[in-house]
Amino acid sequence: MLTPLPPRAEMIEAFLGRDTRYEGIFLTAVKTTGIFCRPSCSARKPKPENVEFFSSAKDALNHGYRPCKRCHPMQPLNESPDWLKPLMDALESDPLKRWKDGDIRSLGLEPERVRRWFKQHHGMTFHAYSRSRRLGGALGAMKKGESQTHAAFDHGFESLSGFRTAIERITGVPTGNAAEKGALYLHRITTPLGPMLAGATEAAVCLLEFIDRPMLPTQLKRIRDRIEESPIPGSNQIILQLEEELSAYFDGTLRAFNVPLDMRDTEFQEEVWKVLLEVTYGTTASYGDLSKAIGNPGAVRAVARANGDNRMAILIPCHRIIGSDGSLTGYGGGLHRKRFLLELEQGIRSPGLFD
Image 1: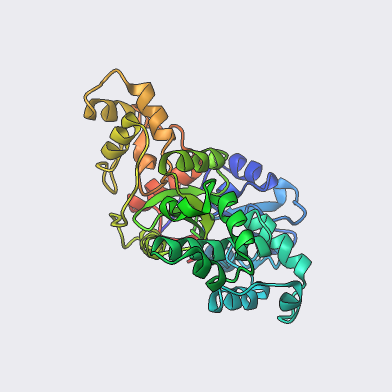
Image 2: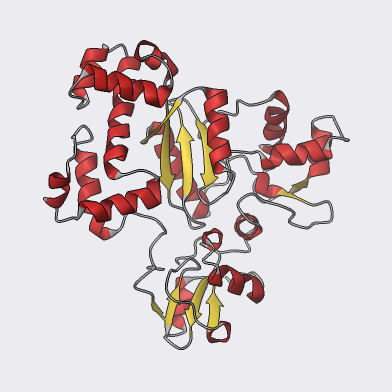
């Protein structure tokens, strides 16, 4: 199936600017080298007249290009690189381990290289990441009734004072009340449109946003204010269900999500988001349509703001809202992503860039 591409000038600007928002939208092939790359590739940029664009790796390969060894365009973006997998496998097999640099070296890895990768992709060092995961496990144990002492020592903490300090720094409340506060698990999910950050309590998803969206820090702050649970790296059954459903959605085999959503916010925003959920797969609506649906036809601008404040992209389908004249209008993740999602749902775009 022929997949439409954005205008050439737009793609050139995105490629030259290493714009990660165009991941999944196109691949760039360089005529002088015979190599094709991601939009965000860090390699030296060629002259615009020497590049052409493809919608899939298959198309680029069929035109005689080979994949770049720097940005690996044949692989889903931001999965753990092969060199890091021994460490990630070890972390999963023993999540309570207290890691030291010597342990990392024993796996044939340089601690500084690991630190740089985790800072770039998770915003914290590997040691902080593994420590936060242990904290999450301890919080979960306390929520089930385990004592502070057992929770601390069973999850790799050497002293109660250090455990209490860490818990209070994360939750903002005394350790004795931390179990009541609960945990908000944050987990990166790889998609054809680039990585997304998912957030979920033990009951429901409350965040799904593209990692490069500038509003993401604001969304995280609002979640802490509204839901009052402590953000901790990790996953749970809700996030596992979300990953499975997102994969099926991008494969074109899922049209309605079943994962539970936590939409707690202002009364008006919740009202708009509930109406958004009624805009079904393969259809679109306008801001005016939403305003009428909530019984307030004059609230078009307020509805547009609530639409932009949606913190669960794709799940609450704000991408299905277009202008009254049929134009795409704005989208927090970028119009190219909005176009991709609408074309996927309308059968115009074949599922997946990496076919």
